[in-house]
Image 1 (cartoon, rainbow, N blue to C red):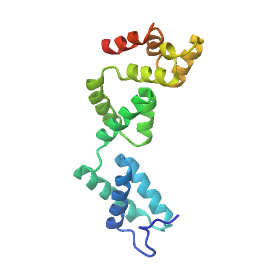
Image 2 (image 1 turned 90 degrees about the vertical axis):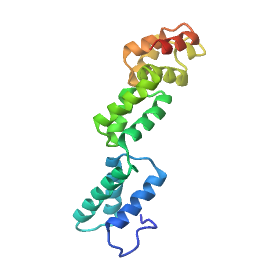
Image 3 (image 1 turned 30 degrees about the vertical axis):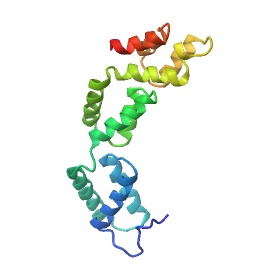
Image 4 (image 1 turned 45 degrees about the vertical axis):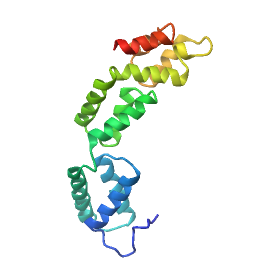
Length: 182
């Protein structure tokens, strides 16, 4: 599939790769490693014999964008983490997703630390959001099997302790109190 910016016969230069990168970043937030993957996929579609110069240009462009602040892996990880926590995803799941996008473990920890200072126990807050979304524990409409609810938390990546803390609350006020304690 050709793109508008893939002019026939246009050599793959650092300027072209930078245009591709900026166009991608206008539409999607990205980590540096993910941007490199996207750009390499674009180069491969052109079926160029020697991809070495393009790979070097991609690395140069990614480093330039990092220096200019257009790419910030810690900020990217923090934004993605906040969104996924609100959806009720566990830190384990979020960590795996960020690793898949090429975010380094140190950048993940810096993002988690910044968010943790703002919001307290991240996994507990995510578990409450998960329970609310899936209507588990005090958020359910009718009686349910506790073992099945624990299994749902486990499949979502939450520890048993966090799941039991959320499921052990008698009402929604107790859930809010649990969040305030942490």
